[in-house]
Length: 184
Image 1 (cartoon, rainbow, N blue to C red):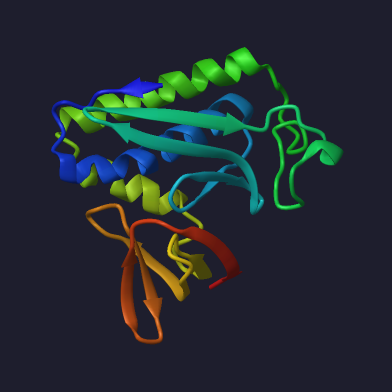
Image 2: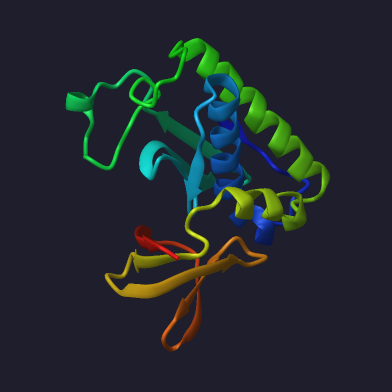
């Protein structure tokens, strides 16, 4: 999907990946009844296993959003033991067109509301925090530079960064691969 949030200041674009993850999680739950959660910033989980992932890349004044959802993947087709599919989660329907339409509608609703509010984080923050399993969990974050940060996922700040409570204090992170070590 191609998004052009012209009414949103650049500094608030950091919320787009979180918005997309929240929209996908909501759409999947709405269409399948399967309970979804989020792993910061935008992986969709079912029972702690990855069901869907969202990638977002900015290109000038536009953002390209890609979504991958395991719909009918069987257990032996999964890429890792930490993954699942709608089929394996017991969804009553695994019709891809229905799932796609729900995702597009959900993304459109959240995106329009966010744009109408000039990207104000308040339009997403509470809903995101309620759905995010990373908050309150003991985590390890592998940063793009090879560094590892360990602590508890404390909150999402106004820039959409994950704030990790480490033994040395709070550390806001804008990117990284989060591993849930243990729920708090």
